[in-house]
Amino acid sequence: MLAESLAAADADLAWQPAERAAWEDLFRQAGRSSLEQAWAYGEAVAREHGQDIERQVISAGGEPLALLQAYRKPYWLIGVTRILRGPVWLIDPLEDPRGADVCRAIARRYGSGRFDFLSWLPELPDDPRSEALMESLRLHRVVTGYASIWLDLRQSPEALLAGLHGKWRNALRKAEREGLSIARDRKERQRQAALLLYDTFRRKKRFVGPSGDFIAAIAAADPEALLSLSARRDDKLVAGVILLRHGASATYLASWTSDAGRAGQAHNLLLWRGIEKLREDGLQWLDLGGLNTESQRGLARFKLGLGGKVFTLTGSYL
Image 1 (cartoon, helix red, strand yellow):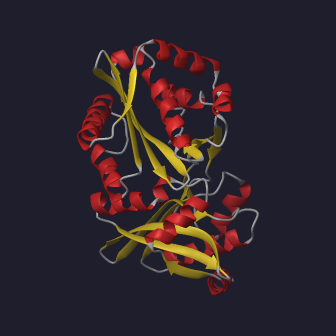
Image 2 (cartoon, rainbow, N blue to C red; image 1 turned 135 degrees about the vertical axis):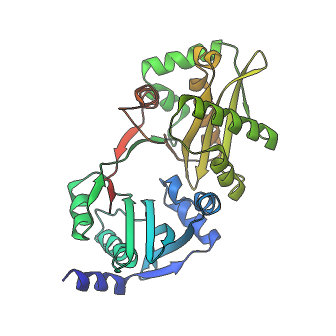
């Protein structure tokens, strides 16, 4: 019965390899989108990790329903496919019955063969309907839901400011009085310096995060994606923030700070200036890049202070 239902779903859906221009156009139409499904992110994975990238537009009756970027790599006779925060939906996957059809077709395409192995973090909310759907595909949850925060940039600056938690707003006001100079890293040497400082900070603090080389690879694939901002005090670099644009959304990806930057609340001012720039460029949503209240409580409080909407995905499945 499962095989018959999967075949029926496939019969009603069309898979079309994506050209970049069409992909980027649909990606913008999707509104909220994940960085991991962005074209430039896929190019960085291919370059830095040697994985094959397969991009498909999944349609029904000529209507695009979803965009899927899958990462594939053979290990001897086994074909391993990873899907990270995909697909990018152009419909509501839980309210539109075609959402379930898309998920069934993905499972059939990448995980039904004897030597096929699928690891999937679907872009589905932590909802009993999502869990039931994934389990109906004979996939089992191995990691509980990924959480992050969406900040709606369509709001006015006044509304965004009013939405800040009191301590966050006070820290922003303090930073504005500290005489910090915030500048965009426009030149290549400035970007390289920012990534080097970030890598040094990442190794010193021993936290898991994308390497500077990986971020540079994303920027190489899409020169307009990277928004790097640095803070100076007395002409000395004290902190930095890196945001990445993708479609109508952006992601807060990386940051670093010094003792002087921390004391001056530089991160609050850097991120606020970044938000202002994203709005100026017409971006609609900011993903704050993950929410870990166990091992990164301080960072989690910082992100929550922006007053966005917390979301949790259903989890990772094998």
